[in-house]
Length: 86
Image (cartoon, rainbow, N blue to C red; front, top):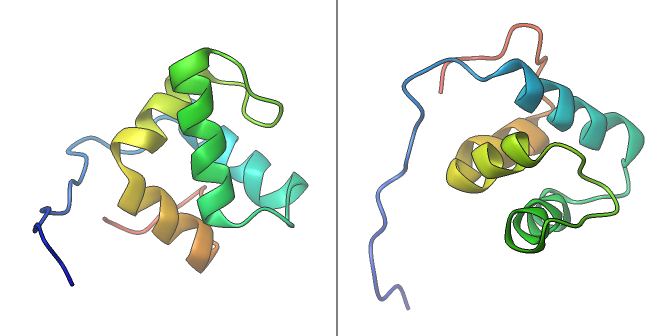
């Protein structure tokens, strides 16, 4: 049962280049990664400063902040050169 409603957080600015690069890297080189596993790696990098799969801490911070946009991009396999509006 849902206990709390969390509004969907959407960025007001376009997706930064380092985020596009990191998501593309996760999509292409780690195809066995689910969106959930990739998100956990980003959270790990933000919290501990260490990750085996994610290299950009600023991109990881953006991904953690806008989890729903990241999940949608991973699941729908967005073309990150021309991402849809979120």
